[in-house]
Amino acid sequence: MAAGSARDPLVARRAARIKEEDVSYRTKMLEIASGLSDVIAMGRGDPDFHTPAHIVEAAKRALDANEHHYTHPAGLAPLREAIADSLGREYGLSYDQDEVVVTAGVQESIMLCMLALIEAGDEVLITSPRFTTYDQAVEAFGGVPVPVPTHERDDFALMPAEIEARITPRSKVLVLVSPNNPTGAVTPPSVIREIAALAIRHDLIVISDEIYAALIYEGAEHLSIARVDGMRERTIVLNGFSKVYAMTGWRVGYLAAPKAFVRSIVDPRHMLSINTSTPSQFAALAALTGPQDAVTEMRNAYAQRRALLMRSMDALGLTYGFPGGAFYLYTNTSGTGMKAPEFCETLLREGRVLLFPGSLFGDDSDLYTRVSYLQPLHRIEEAMARFADVVERHRARA
Ligand SMILES: Cc1ncc(COP(=O)(O)O)c(C=O)c1O
Image 1 (cartoon, rainbow, N blue to C red):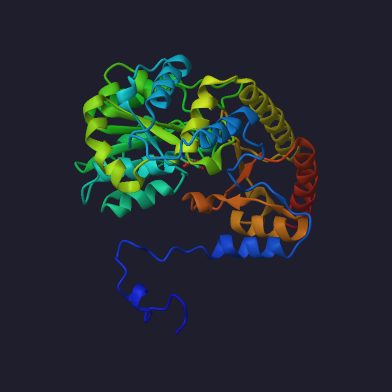
Image 2 (cartoon, helix red, strand yellow):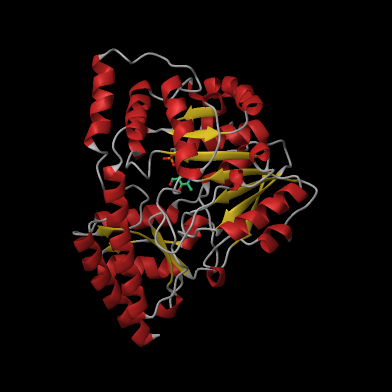
């Protein structure tokens, strides 16, 4: 019997909520890449830097001190306190430690939020193009994801009119991701205030995913929507350590929300995985309370790489939305005469650079390609030389 066929007893009796995900494009690209040498991978969202040494040391010390038992499901008290402090210091947010839940990455916070909020038929408005975990989490609980498109002409900022046009009596939650993955867009403070007014007017809960908020570049400003008057009580702020501290594999993230809600989700959080890995929580504590020089260095390196990418795209005449934050550039590659999935495949075969098209981020326009700048500067230079060759060759033919 073929693995995964409908006659497989496990597959045959699987719950209807598990969809046959079409991973054929991504798999094909990875297979092509594995058959090539010297591929420059600029498709992933995983920092190329190592976790700073003092953070790694803190985890080792925790293990040596036998800190490998269960913790409170909401996380170690000193870590929750450090998170509350950092939310105040960095973003002007005011949370107590018992308004914070530490999770296995922001990924688990997303699942926990949907588990706690979504009833069958509830509609969830999501900034799009998007990190599609949101769709899957909403659908797992019978909710309906409603993508809210953003546009290059607005630098991919989420626009209130686009939200408003999709509000129905079933709209319950708005997912705001700023800075955004895959566009790098930062929704400006004035627009955040308008979105807040709209959320209040339509009685929406806001999940504000701020995982990239510490990676903001010149010309952009981050305002957490939870800071706007009247929003704290209807907002859940998500943030984490994966991107900013180069800690993807440690699996530490958190949510912050008013006390009564947080108290009510501690049990469901316990049900999911009891607690975030204990040594990882000690590492996260060291990340927040230790020196921040490494974060500054990484941010400066990203800024340099980003500037190089923007210059290269400008020289080629390819447009993009202003990437105010994160480590992505969302580039319009339609001038090559190819749809983005075809362009990415051609670039990989002919230029040995691995990028992913917008279709992997729920964008069916086929116009855009996401470039992540998680390679050293000299590799990005090499990648852009190869990219330019492929673009120019195909543009000449188009
Ligand atoms: C917008 C967004 N939210 C959440 C996550 C998940 O991050 P974590 O590693 O904290 O689970 C990602 C990862 O790429 C992301 O881009």
